[in-house]
Image (tube, rainbow over all chains, first blue to last red; front, side, top):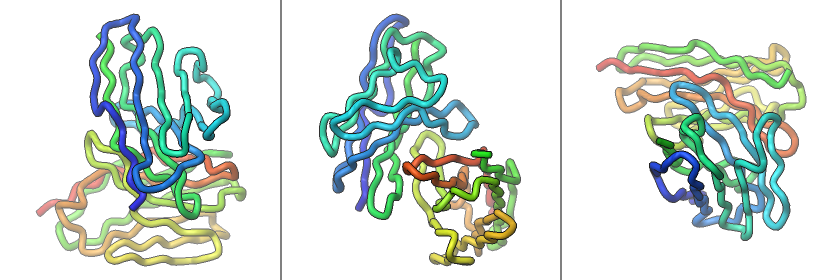
Length: 114
Length: 111
């Protein structure tokens, strides 16, 4: 139980384009989902917290106009990287808040911006 | 004050040995302490977690020891296997369910 999926698992795009990443909780309802980014050999850095039906809360230093988060249902949250640039290349991971406030993580999405 | 300090940065253990990873925190508002295992190119997977009212929790080969007064907690992996080779992250949860992660420990188990 408590499975989270992400799509796509990897994406390559040109600089200036936008990319959407989907995060789904497959067997539980996640009223709260989190988005992280992880650079190689580094820890996870929280980008934002999204609650179903309301605006996301962004961590300090994260551009909310660049990283658009939508949490339209109890099982789906999306992250859109707008006007992506090479410095946005990273591993993006989502998590859903499940039973006993445990975070269950998705498999991650590798974004490469050329 | 929201940091979680994790050590060592990397660890090499012989097969069958005990792997020990330590974490320390300052913020007494943390109320939940999970450990995650991450393989390259994958998302973190929950291994085991503990709440501050318990001093030890064991699940199979994995044990968390928690010292509330010292604000420290550790992960012990008994009978370490090559398949345990991965990066391990400790974390601590704040109110609002945010997790603060340690820097990670790269474990290599030699066969």
